[in-house]
Length: 216
Image (cartoon, rainbow, N blue to C red; front, side, top):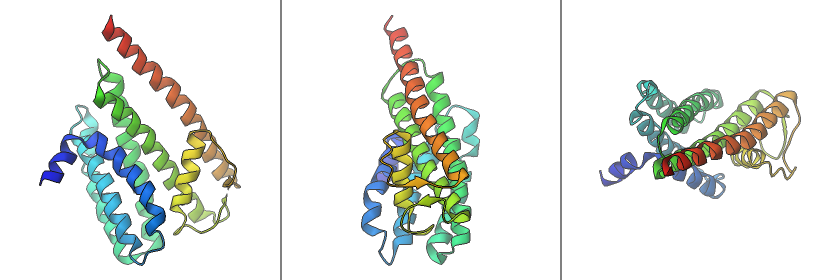
């Protein structure tokens, strides 16, 4: 109960922390026999944080928070069955739900009248969310186009590499060790790089503007 209370009161922080925690831990259990269940635990924590974040929203998108429970259910089925087709559906649902959560957080940032800890953590959560979505979308592309990226592994085993690709593209680091090879993969890389640059520029401008207006 105490854990649930902490998650509920700090869902915007828990959302970012749980995603970062999964990124850190994923390489250590990616080859474990019960990898699916570890994924389920981390993704459920992420989803619960996202659901609570939506429920606490003051805008109409909070009504769609129940969709998160559907994603958790499908995620559990994937953990139990290991079916790649169901996993594909699960990843698509993840993308749609996380985009919904990110849009909700962005609207709250824009509507906020001052810059406080909640607004700052919301801005961080949006950035991490889109990186996560980029990785999931890369996995979906790789499912339909196995040669879409120059990397070792496949749709089932390469999620950490997709996370790596997504975040180094968003941050425009671009080491070049994972390359998009097909038009769809290259288009994804373009959008991720554009988002990384535009988001930081726009969000910093919004936060500074709100801070200065409050200060005056």
